[in-house]
Image (tube, rainbow, N blue to C red; front, side, top):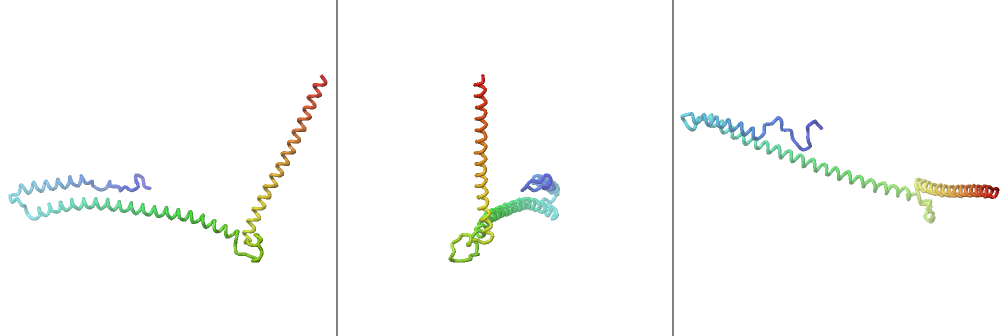
Length: 181
């Protein structure tokens, strides 16, 4: 973003403010009115009337221009807000759509179309090659976990036996020292 630029605001530094425009026009009108009063013919000539009418028209145009710019800014902000809301909706929709597709693809890989024999009730026969591979990997993982638990329980039992044996040896040494004295 540009330095000094704020979201939704328009830089009005190059434009006259409404009060400055009114002040300038009122000064011009006063000068013209004073000139018309000094003129012997009160109504003035056509050029003077035209000038007053032009000044009044410029005042109306400047007010209308400011209102038009404000309306355009409001319209742009509404368009941006609508676009952002639609974009957020699309992102959310695609996020959940992706999850549902991943789930359906996963199920399709597990139970795909490669049925070898319609009379066989074997689960492996109903799976695709990728599904069989995934199922075997899961079974191997479970088998590895069970083997690990079994090995850890054996190691724990061995460590307990070693600890108990060392404790008995220490107790025998202590009892032998007590009997000796």
